[in-house]
Image (tube, rainbow, N blue to C red; front, side, top):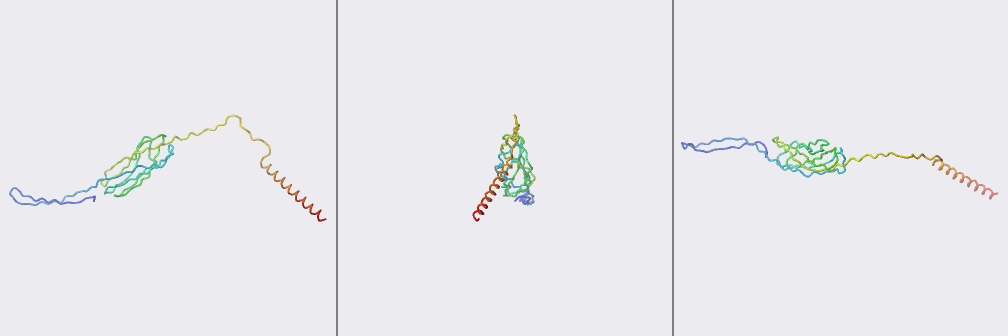
Length: 193
């Protein structure tokens, strides 16, 4: 295991007078496990991004060592690329995995090649930085289309509105129905008399 420990050294010897002697001493020793971190391939989730839009990515960080790694953070390196927001993942225990979700952005259109910079520390405070390359495509922003109408502007036609036509048709049907009712009523009266 990692950390301080003690060990004893005992020395048996004979001096020039052939006298046997023994010397013992306890020595401190700090055991440090090697850092073994495995970084996966970054997954890029956004494919249709424009300049200034966030680009979502995820990266798996696996601690394969026997000691904890501390202060895991991720940055980005590449021309025209920046972090949309800073990422701090904290500590990762031995035999554990950290799924880091980060957002990067670019203000320029085109294909951008860069690296995610994964930084962490071991138990002794030694800082390690590993790079994971990636490439993203940022599309051009669509240009606004100006719609300027040239030529003569057509004026609405004056005349009877659609509401007046529908209302007039309804009135004509009502009058025809009323007239038919009156005619039938009259006919029944004349048959009775």
